[in-house]
Image 1 (cartoon, rainbow, N blue to C red):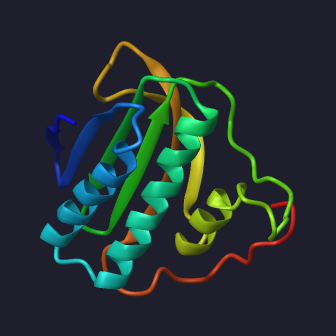
Image 2 (tube, rainbow, N blue to C red):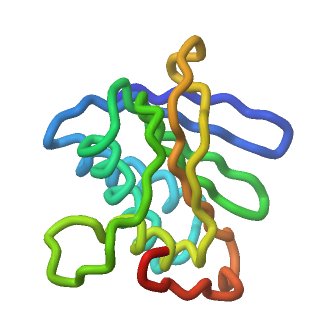
Length: 155
């Protein structure tokens, strides 16, 4: 993975192209952990972000199309992590089945981000001529995220 970096006002942006490989999720987790540690964020926030990165990349590999990219946006108030893939299909939570092997990723992201997550069309940072789908979450840099959005069956 190659790191690209550009700054806009008080916002810093990092991006890494991802290769669909079994080692990529672990490498991405390490990269995000290292970047967030350098921002002196709380251990709990870092652990939550790393878990959510795993979920988003795994979903992109399972249900999306290449190319893939991971982006980290940092400003004074929050961090936002984005995974871009080439599929136009938007993710949707699967039926609430606690015994299912798959289908819990978006619920994990919803819960840990206190509902600050989503999906929308997005230009790639590493390939500016391509448009894909961005699945993202945001976390505050300091303090508690705020009100927890309850996760209900089918949402």
